[in-house]
Structure formats: C-alpha cells, structure tokens
Image (cartoon, rainbow, N blue to C red; front, side, top):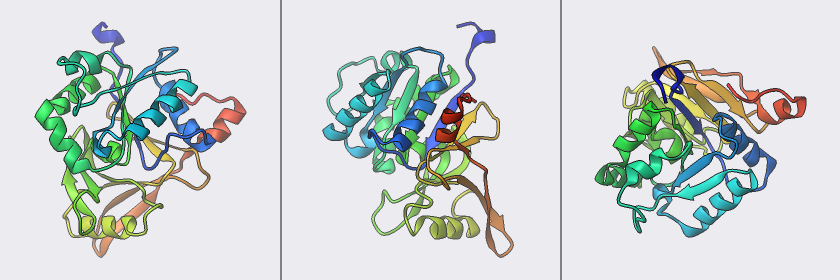
Length: 249
C-alpha cells in the first residue's frame, strides 16, 4: 500500500458488547465491519484476557460468520504459528475480548504481541475490543484485574489518557473513576457505557456510537473540587440503519 493510500489508524473501544444475535450486539459489530473496505473483512480475535475460553471463541466465530465476515483467532496457549506478526498483519480487523487486562498484557509482552499490535495500528489495521479490549489501547485503564477493587493499570499507550468500560453497567465504575482522577492516580479520560463505543480515526476527537437508547460516553477530567464529567452525544446505530444513513465515519 502506497503512503498516499495508507489507511489512517483506527481504534474502536466498546464499553460492553456480547457475541449474540441480539440486534444491539450485532449493530455494534456491523459498525466495526463497515469501517474497512473489504467485502468480507478478515477479523481476528485475541481471547487472552478471558483465558482463551472455548465457548467465547465459538460464539465469536458464529457471531461474525452471521455478519458475513471471515473470523479467526490467535491462541498463545496453543500457538498454531510461529510467525505471529504475519498472521495478525494479514487481517483487516483485530478484536480483543474482555477479561483480565493485567494478565493479558503480560502475556502479550512475552510474545511481543504488544509491538505487533502497534505495527498493525500504524499500518491501518482496525483495532477494536470490549472491556479489557477497550482499555488496553490507552495509556491507562480502570481495571478489576487485581482483587480488592478497581485500580489504575498502565496499558499500551496508543491512545492518550485513560478509559473505563461498563460505566453504566457496574455500580462502582463511575465513582471509582472520578475518585482516582480527582486524586491524580489515573489520567483524565473516557468512561464508556455498555453498548456504546469510542471510534478514533488518527488523532481526531472520537466519534461516539451506541446501539442502545441512552448509552453514550463521557469525558472525565480533574476539577478543583474533585472530577468533572461531560457527556458526549452518541449516534444511535439502529436509528441510522433504519434511516438508511451511512454508518462509516
């Protein structure tokens, strides 16, 4: 691909998403697939955060086959290739599942997957994921990977600032994120509701999309008396699809 035709780096970070036939789940997946030009996008699952759970992987295949994509997965417990870089770089989309972010990042670093993902992003492969697969792209994430409460975790740093998923789905997410930002224990950043996503293209301000009414994302920054939260306006994907509007950014 020539420099002038090179795709801009893209990341789609989802606050909460499942591999079901539910229209809310499928709408988010259709949105991800629509951001690449391939008629049948090649989408690879990285399931390490969830311990490479076989049921999750099977659901991923069913989900994306139903959407006319070409799914695959990369195992690091039972590797099927020694050339991980060529395998991952051969995909249009890389999707990271949820689970334990700290353990996932440790495993990635041991196998140099973190470096390969950075290369893929720079070359135009769309990076996406949910929960652990959302926060991993930022400098820091709010995680429950360590028993005892929600804490800050250093991540890959492809995107500036921090991120918390499940902002409306877990009662302690919002207050913990506000407290850590107010105490300067985690960088300012984004909270993402379940069924909402941040879509970054290059260095642009993210587009916010959602497949459930009321779901959106928030920017949280330090304030003199704690932390300040502002709400983004989200584009509702099912409404756009019903109107026949383009869902590409």
